[in-house]
Image (cartoon, rainbow, N blue to C red):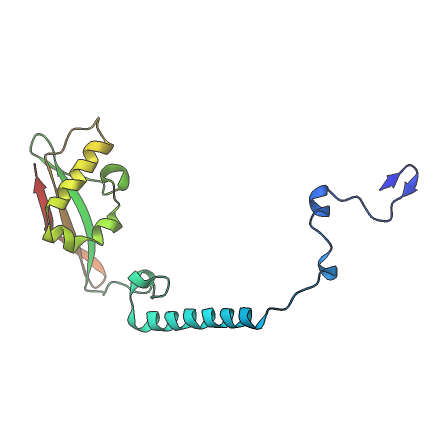
Length: 173
């Protein structure tokens, strides 16, 4: 850069670069103390041990230390694909499938699927989904009941051959 007819020895840098300090080559490093090295080594050992234990004995609930099985398994060629559905009873008495989403009932499908034993043991919990719908969607018709339905999509030789349904829990007003 030329200033008043002279050439500057160093080019002008923006203030954000100047504030960064000396170039990397001029910076000095401070070695870690023995205690800091020990703490880092101990933490690395604990994490490694948790990963090993989680890989061989734990399940998805221990994530990030357990294996993330969702993507490492597949449905057998003659197996079933499980799909949770929510059906709502309308004021006219008919049943209609509704989205199992947090914007509709306050929780998402995965949260419900993880709590299936609780819904089976206490079907009144399905009523909480209905109450959440009333609160979240006051302009829509009030449901007079709801039921959680597990759908089994049956596969034979990796081809879809039919559907079976089982009511997991039901609640009526």
